[in-house]
Length: 327
Image (cartoon, rainbow, N blue to C red; front, side, top):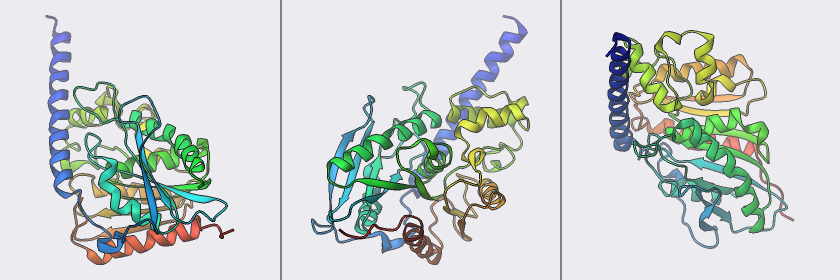
């Protein structure tokens, strides 16, 4: 075996180990803390037919996971409706739309059509599935969601995205990258603890700042492509990672953004979220940045900030996607 082949195989082996380590760490921590309730009981609603109905497991694509649940407000007297698509978390390898049933019912109770969307989960047995392919599935689901909502007598005029953790990452991507290509305009996006960019120096919670091979393996797993660690800090890397980096798509036309991050987050590093805030500010995008000073990924230690996040969601929807008057 040549020295070159041996070196490549060693790198591939370590890349697999690093990626596996990342998945285990991410999932263990995410599932332990993902049941956070940043809005507390403010997302609870006494659900019955006078509030709305749920149409479950509607199909939008060819994959088994390509299903969505539609939450239809009982009031059918409006000419048009706003749509809120809320995306579930789970480290890109787990989770389900039904995990967010409470917040989806709450959004519907406000008068909006809400949709929880499943996407194909990444796993060792499903090669080719990654953050990029997941975001494309979600992008392609919107036309079907709009079509089905109209079929049930709730025509959609405009929409917003929301999500938490992995779902927050996907919400940002679809809002910034794909917003102009969707069948209805994206008016706002709100998310909590979603990764928005991938710079090794930010991801020091995994040791990426000191180990470029680890960073390349982790980010490459999420991208679905091999990343050469020697490209970090270059335009070539910026162009390659752009497919899954919401930060790269921000411009002056990006939708107003509500974000929430924990200072002690060991899953999605807080330092990365500061780049998101800086980019929104630089491009003049209206935004609110809610910082959970005492919390990690679960946002569990700052109840007042959780209440603020819930209030701000309502404020953003009222301001940027107000309900149409009843007929």
